Image: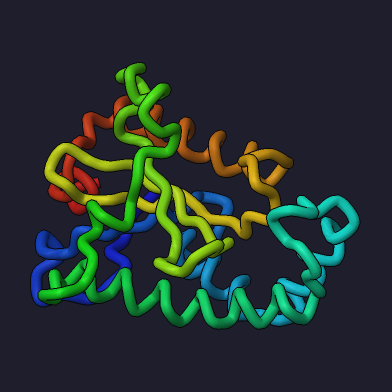
Length: 186
């Protein structure tokens, strides 16, 4: 397992948003998500496979074309928000504001989940999700992402994402990685 900064900075230590490169993948998981989310064929297939079981309240009167259009808008907005947050642009949301606790307040009482985070674009009803681990120095390590087509976090795509979070946490602990310097030294 390797790691890379998501955005180029003069000094890697300044980048607060990093991504995992899984041994079975050639590119980092952030780029993989964005390539999929920007690929209309991928989106159409993903949505079509799940369309009949969509939450009728969450996607009232939705069509596959509407969902594809929504994702295209979200991809651009999310990328800009993440870049602005990483660069700490005044008046923009910070990474801490974008990445919320994965399990909300109830589960956050369990300290083994306290560093698990999720982010989404700042659009009402947004459906893109990124998952990350918050490191000790405030760096976010993206472990994956998906398209949320159900009100609850259910389905095989969420299991994969939650398993990836756990997998990366085990790796970080085993290698004593707790901050951005550890990601660089790895």
